[in-house]
Image 1 (tube, one colour):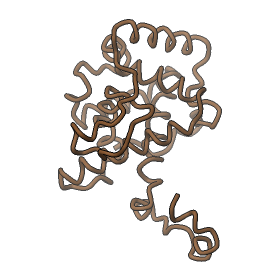
Image 2 (cartoon, rainbow, N blue to C red):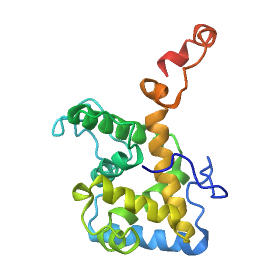
Image 3 (spheres, rainbow, N blue to C red):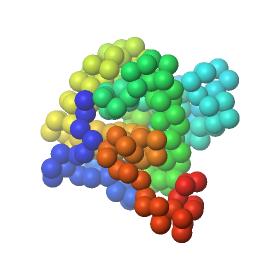
Image 4 (tube, rainbow, N blue to C red):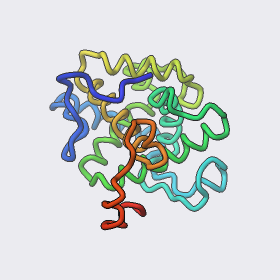
Length: 208
């Protein structure tokens, strides 16, 4: 199970920047994104895929995540959220799917600068040469087990390379926020929810 918090002294994500990579990291990510695009990697938003994937809400339209990104998070979430997902397989798959939809909703609100950084990170992980070289993940993401996904995350968490550390933080931050920030999962963190007086005076909290 991956840590829900960054390492002490590790750069935290911010509203301004998810990946503070420095010039070298920025150039690398930019080069990878261009290469991924030229190779035909799918980076267009997935749109409505519920009609062909029963796990997804048929009415939900992905505005940022591509189909490759969705496959990436389907592989990573069981490792990131280990111990918190339902045991029943059908319910587990539905929970992962709804969490991915909330990840998409969250990224849409991040604004263009962070969206560009995350697109580069996702391209790095979806482009086979860099997935194998930097993630050391030889199989495509749909074939990766939760154990393999956890091993990848731990390598990036413990890496001496800042780009990989920050990639780990970004992946786990947005995943944990999408899962534990959902009202139905608050109890898993011991959070009882906002006080009654707050929801009564500010009813928009209940529909947010």
